[in-house]
Image (cartoon, rainbow, N blue to C red; front, top):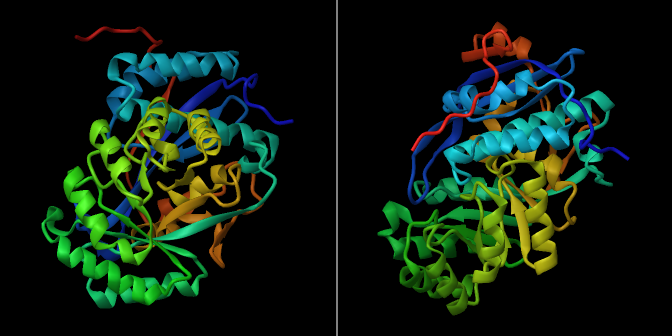
Length: 390
């Protein structure tokens, strides 16, 4: 039985590399951000004393937190088992807060440690985490608020040909000021999908409770599978009111950086939880939300870097899905020598040790795709010394 708890991680080096952004298939906009003409990726590589490496996507813009809190512990902890190492990492960022990027950085290091542990044992990460299957259901995501009807039709056709049975589109055009057009676009997409393919909508937090209820009524006939982040993710009182006044399934979770808030979302009436693995403070936190969803009888899905996320989702119920935002995510595949295949509405996980993605670093170096990099060892990182800032 594979377990990480008693594994020792004597990390000798940490390497952060930022890759050149790749162009979006279609420049993408949602209710509150965009358009995004390109999409980027930064990778964190941990190497242990025996030359084994673990990698995971990482925030590339918070070097100060890495250098002041996390790397001093990671590089100067020797012969410390994971079940002792992880709490040290976690509590080192207490004064940075558990609801922001510091918490996510702990999780990104934790995912890299899990990747390293699985690689050392020579098994895929999903098998290391006791999954019994190699396929993960996915759903198509896109439908930017800036898309023309022709672009919507092209994207919907692509997903339907690939066998998905659910498509999610953006609503809240022009910062939520064009609700009538949003509703017409939803009706248009429903006409393309027919009634056998589920349709979800995502408002990226733009409306208040009253506006969200009005929009829910406008699209009621379109059989919306779920209504994602229709109001501000921190407005718990309004989330509760919304859930109590609409029959639509309301989903939240992408904006959270800690698993501790998800029970509150369930109490508010949220019926679809959507934690992003590399937003939370570790693999175990993501699993906590997975198990909460199963116990509460609510839907569960995850997005983020979909090809990485698929590995974790293989441990969930087979009905649970990974979001694939094709327009901006697919371009990153040029950097990967190995990644999950997308077929008949599923990701097929490769039989490779660790996470199901391998960055082709030789290609990245040869083509000058690494735009920025940082390298740390115990020679240029001091031992951990907690500081207090008020």
